[in-house]
Image (tube, rainbow, N blue to C red):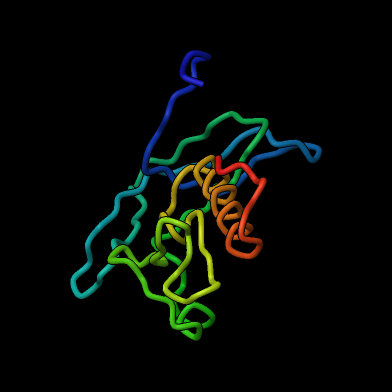
Length: 141
């Protein structure tokens, strides 16, 4: 994308999509800062006043990140161990601390690029197949 003139912008919040006739025309955006609030463990996102701007666009791909998976509910009920980052802890074969429970992608590695999630999913599937069947024909990449 850089070779084609694309430019990366960081700390930008999309406020809304702008469209006409059911087709995307642009994004209404604002710059943000991440502030450490007293008594809070996580940073708080704050809009920078007066930093609103628009970006022309005809396609939008949503990549929704998070700090770590929600622990309450299934993950805690299963008794899974968590890494210091808050992600599900696994061994080199993608198995969690609970036998027969595997994990990959953002939940294991943390938020990242979708290509990492795809790669991890394939490697995890390889290891699950090998665990269940004793061998596998699935590629590990």
